[in-house]
Length: 42
Image 1 (spheres, one colour):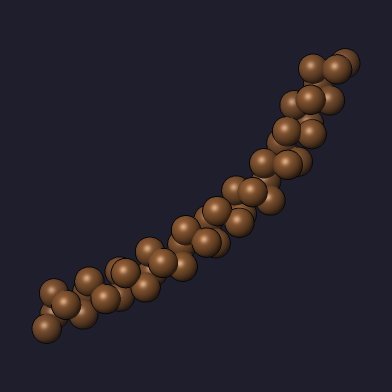
Image 2 (cartoon, rainbow, N blue to C red; image 1 turned 120 degrees about the vertical axis):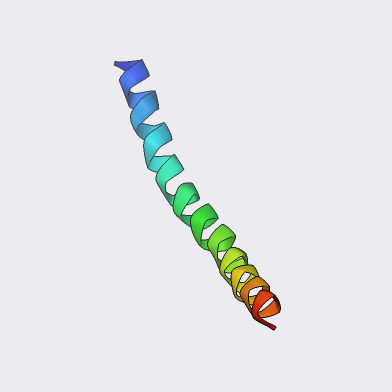
């Protein structure tokens, strides 16, 4: 029972962290992708 609860709490805690990392990590990547595409075109 304790192991199941630990897995559930771990998953619940991991989901928001995963969303935050994808948002924070995704914003700079998009900006860099735009800059790199502009540089390659120009």
